[in-house]
Length: 275
Ligand SMILES: Nc1ncnc2c1ncn2[C@@H]1O[C@H](COP(=O)(O)OP(=O)(O)OP(=O)(O)O)[C@@H](O)[C@H]1O
Image (cartoon, rainbow, N blue to C red; front, side):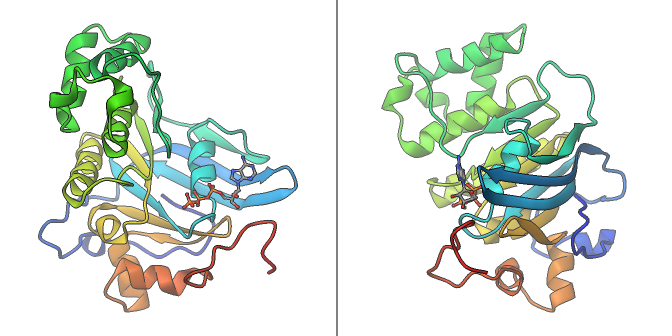
């Protein structure tokens, strides 16, 4: 990911965390941009939510958006995923031709009641023309650890299980870009780690994975690139190790605290909170 906002230089050595469990990719040099966003603004009515965001989302990498509540992460993800038209600027897809270019997990996934988990995923597989819709659906369920829930009606799932079905749904058709809005929200610690591992595995296979998260420890360990969003602007971006080194701090949490203006305990509401 690159932006026209403050950036930090990256080197291969710096991009690798010393954490033994890190899954960050080794090589940052040959990741082609799959999505290219240029000078994005977005406003809901008169409320400006994104300003001058220019960035790329790269193949073979996990890119994480972090930022306070209301800073514009969901809005930016939806613009990049092509689900929301920006008020100004453009998003260009530069990936390969694909039946499904972008898979998307919404912040609050919901599925039509009355069908089982397997039927639901089979339906999504058939939409993207998967020849082996049944096998594909079963594989996705196994990947997210939900094979035992295959025959359960979707309305009988817990919140965390529904999110896992959403993640499975987002990867159907092997889209070159997978956008996950807070994929670990509501998941227990083990499943949160598992979901980030899935993101890493997708990136290792060449997928451009873009996610948002408030779990800074998992982001620190997993993401190849991080963009810090504050009040609709990317205020810092780069590999987490580079950001830590630049600011001479030992955690992404400290980078975050140095980068955002929000006071703990107060949500800055764009269009309402005074500058
Ligand atoms: N449909 C909408 N109409 C008007 N304002 C909206 C709409 N959706 C979002 N907003 C406003 O846009 C701003 C950014 O919201 P967004 O959901 O993108 O933030 P976020 O960073 O994803 O927040 P969170 O971490 O709480 O999920 C907020 O001030 C929000 O109230």
